[in-house]
Image 1 (cartoon, rainbow, N blue to C red):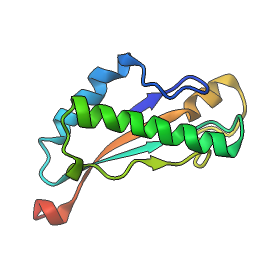
Image 2: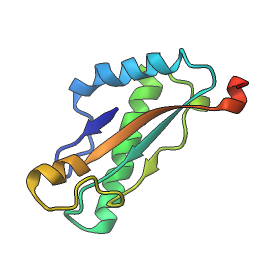
Image 3: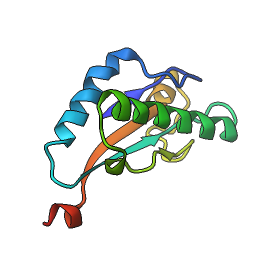
Length: 116
């Protein structure tokens, strides 16, 4: 799933809470699951600011998974702060910039833990 953010913002819009919590519940049904959270920023602003924004965004989504979704810390990968890397859209239009301000959350399966 993808959570989008306003320019310069790190607070998760409450409209995403049900989706994040549903993802947490789905993950718990998968044997050997791990949840990966990666934060990104648009290319506007300085690279160091964008790195910090992507880190704070990833941490905020991770906190929802841990605190409200009750995902055990042992099932979370360390949140990744990707900064301006891996821009979804390279042009500088407002819509493209908005798509780049995101956190991507994935459920992964550790086949070693799952015994697959």
